[in-house]
Amino acid sequence: QVQLVESGGGLVQAGGSLRLSCAASRSIFSGNNVGWYRQAPGKQRELVATFTSGGTTNYADSVKGRFTISRDNAKNTVYLQMNSLKPEDTAIYYCCVRGYVSYWGQGTQVTVSS
Image (cartoon, rainbow, N blue to C red):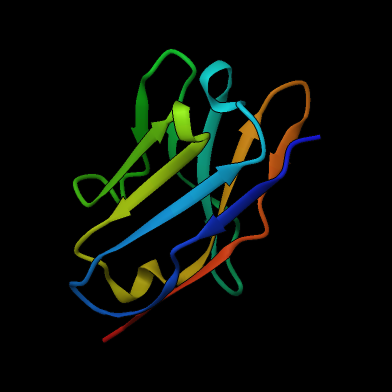
């Protein structure tokens, strides 16, 4: 009953920036935890950043200081600002909101060239 759509991915050069968006079909983020994940070929899915219902944020060590997760409850949207991108950031990025069940978006591809 909740649809999530990620957008904002693309091809950028190392050192560049992207802002990913995760739009929900209805209000959902204010009362639940949301996270950004990524998965590169041959690797396990990795938790990149979280934004809890209480307003706290956490980041994987690999992206601390470079990525910022935020939310706009009025727009039913969560963002991931990605700065100083590195080739190792290349992956498909997914957002997930956790309620009674977990809802996932379709993913958006981020490719960082050297």
